[in-house]
Image (cartoon, rainbow, N blue to C red):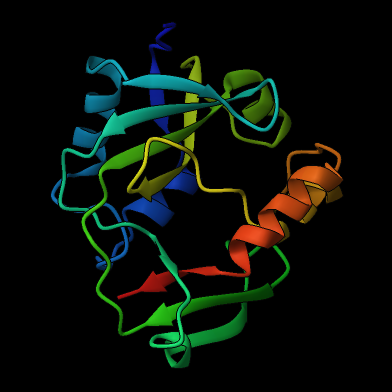
Length: 189
């Protein structure tokens, strides 16, 4: 199994995974530096191909108390769903998002780290000297990735100028994503 060394936490991921004001639905029990060091010193359980050649997913057993980020929607919790228009950064346009409030998910079994190559990050305006940059992380019960959200697929298809990667929309993957996200939502604590 190939191991990608020289991994750095991008500023984009740092603000989302380790916000200034700690939240229950972000990475717990470790600093950004400890997280980055762990990724560079510990071999992943497996490496998955991402949605494009420049994207890899490193599956690590969860070494923190971080909870699963995605929760199934049931009749018992549907009333806890919230929605609003939000942007991930000041430069991006707000999009409709939804999430749970008031749920208590289990501790994740795995942290699936989303990596982009140095070359792709440069195309998107982020220069790193390392080989790979962390752009996100999934906190899951299983060793498999959570489908990318439909809006993220659309943003990617819109291109770098709109905060995406420039990868065209894959209609089959989009339909799988809609199927999953119709019955699941993230949560906020």
